[in-house]
Length: 268
Image (tube, rainbow, N blue to C red):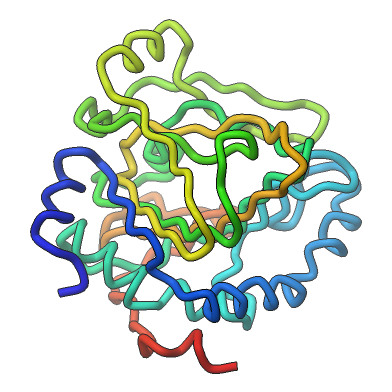
């Protein structure tokens, strides 16, 4: 097992776990080097200030999210299949899983914008997934602090089940965020402890798809990057109404992910 009984129990009770230093300096250096191959700047230029082609932008010059990095032919492919990521998420969910989608999350210095309080299943339930047997993993690619917009979760909030969300579109870019209404959030933050994912490069977190989470604006001079991989239980989709080809989420799958070797990211 890659996780301890205590970690699995913590995930079930709190809706997340954090494992500091799970990936080495060399492995993070490899991923940071491979960012060049993602051709982010050209995708942002092509988007011309709008969300387009798997790129979500802050403005005409600044990326916010870049999807589908697990099919980029880089180390991020290996990360999505890595036992210290995909193996861990299958253990805490307790079911075979596949990569649902992937993204590189940017919080540019002085620019990175807010991600409102939400549950991932608030988005995904609309994509015809009947069960919340889904989770996301994050690897910090640089230092995450409160000032540069670290992710925050409400511990135990997954026990609420999926709650109503409101649309909060940003017309300037076409960004279509959802958020839990402020009136409801005021009660949730009193009921559940707020945890800030402050950490160093190589730190890892995994959270349940119903765990409420958010991130604030980056008000600092330090950019913040995170590789995020989402996983869905094998067979957890509606065969009558499958996901459309234009969805940012991954295709349905009946085959568990094939894990790579644990040392794969250490090989240049």
